Length: 345
Image (cartoon, rainbow, N blue to C red):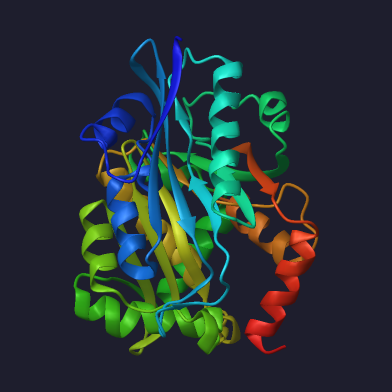
């Protein structure tokens, strides 16, 4: 038999190097480092799935067995797991649609075996990566939700990047400085623990049930893998936060939000943060900045605002599939009900 799929709870020695060689951005969320972080924070179990064709590794997926988890109390909120792979599975360019479908079916089998509520897969969508065969994925029982992002080209000087912004964007970046706001990069575990995490929780208005907890392994591993954390400050008061994960060729935004006080004072705190992150990504020699996530069909004013903010930087728009397979009847309705109970609403 020419095609074989393997499964291991232990990381293959060449796991990360294979990703580096095959995927244009070597996605952090498929790395053994990310698996270690989630195991430390949430006891998430990593499953290393590999597609072998004639004995050669042709694809792989870091599949995570996750639970809705209270990081502060260190306990599961719901007894049943879900399976997730972000920026995976990763496949070599010559893998057929039929063999890709075999991997998706294998993941289904594992999820059913472990009584998972659902599977959520987001294959790589970066510039240069292959487009996933949606027909083959749908044939495995997955519903596809279209999502989008904007990629800003960084292969120019920062002066050229800035000049290419619209006049309005350039003015908002300058406005933050004129109003006395400045960008602070988080440089230590103490700053991460005492500044970034409390600011994130405050901005996101997290409840006790889903509060983001500072984790030393999270900080050390993420920074070692290329994560950067920023705050916009004014008079020692945090106004906005932003995380950026740098990868092989690109930078990926995450963990961002703006405080009500910034809105009240009319300070474009996120504009200042993103410009600082873009400059640093350019200085690192990266090729693009991924603004990470917009709804192609915004359904709320908030989604409209998010899309407008990310579009205005002038990047190239690209859509990608979020692949979801429900394994219990009415899973989405049950999930909404559980979330209401956990949030106390």
